[in-house]
Image (tube, rainbow, N blue to C red):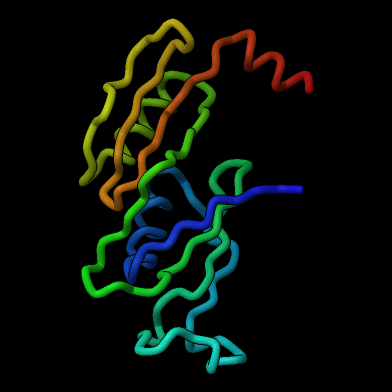
Length: 147
């Protein structure tokens, strides 16, 4: 069993996918547009056919799903009540990922040493998604490798 986050970008999915490719090395492994739906009567009314119906995206070892959703008139996605945690191998990688996600976004907690990590920080990206960038302590990283 798996759980994958499914992110709806209200008409900005193509922009988001390009952003995450640059910021965190995301790879789109599957993409279907509304115009490609073999059962178009199931499409929400008034959608633009070139909008993303479904995308499968790999970031590291994780798969997330994304789409344009209902494309609300305000074009503002609302990502309240959750965040995505990005565990990276080392401090240099944390810096690179954090700064990539920060482009057009806001720092919630600057990257720095904490009691639980040699490098941890929180950023809300330009789409409103909160990310926690985390370097696992050496003992946790060893345990993951052994598992």
